Length: 402
Image (cartoon, rainbow, N blue to C red; front, side):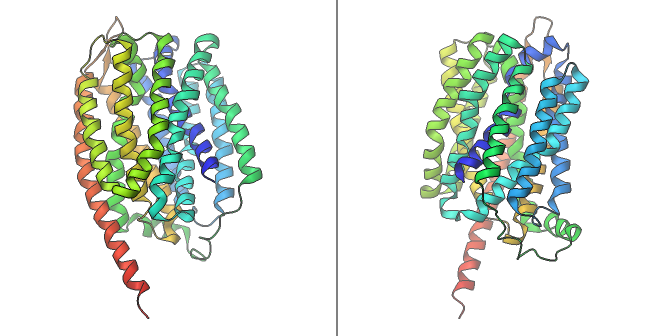
């Protein structure tokens, strides 16, 4: 099950991440501005957010395998549209279509993890599934960039379609039905279910935390390749190596960070990861022309910090929803993340401007905005951790009642 979920995450993450390194190619080839590219990235996020909200009321009324298959097939079709795009508007509409389906997949995966694995081991599970993030860098991004450089940027999306089709076939054949939640949710009206989930005060605290968590990645990632090539002096040919090396170390540290989260505490790991990430973001966003080896080291350490935040936060968040609300909660939480990321990406496109020589301006300002969001999210995660502890104590008190 972990392998299947990791493969799913691999294709969905790669579909989003591949836009970042392709940005350096797409900006001149499609003759688009940084603001338009920001809309291409955020178009996926906004449609994913709306789709997640609409799906939330029904998320706990179906076998999770069937729900996963439906949205995954739509995601593959949408990616095929992206691969066929010939201009800015075609690509933007294709990203919106893909987001309608792709944005819900992650939430279904988290609901499955919460259904199957106990909280005490979820850090390790998240560590392994987060390896998909690194695998997309080691395998997906370098191969995608190579195909883009050799055959055009469309080839990167066709690669995702082919890999995703294989993954979909594996899900159809090997994944068993997951329906333990159906009995707890029987007879509940979808609209009332959605409303009760949205208005639950405990859940709202998580949604606020997720809003800030999404800001950092969505602000820096879309323009990462353009910043590397134009401001840091990294060539397009060296980008696959940069992403590949970063991905190797991320894969190595993913399971390790998961074990640390379970043993030492998820909140402690999140705070440590946040401090490390803030330091590296402050350094990275203020760099000029820099040797490739130095950028590799900075990227590796930065992604270790980011992974520490994501693994620990994801494990903590899964402890909040009740069994009957897990699908709806995860769907709404995913929507909040996508919409927040879309807004962040759009704001980043407004903050950053590109000069005639290709250099990106105002990147240090963008870094400070990201750092501020990390500070606030750390305080919110403390609130979430206290909430998890209270729920655990309440569950123990109920279990000892004769």
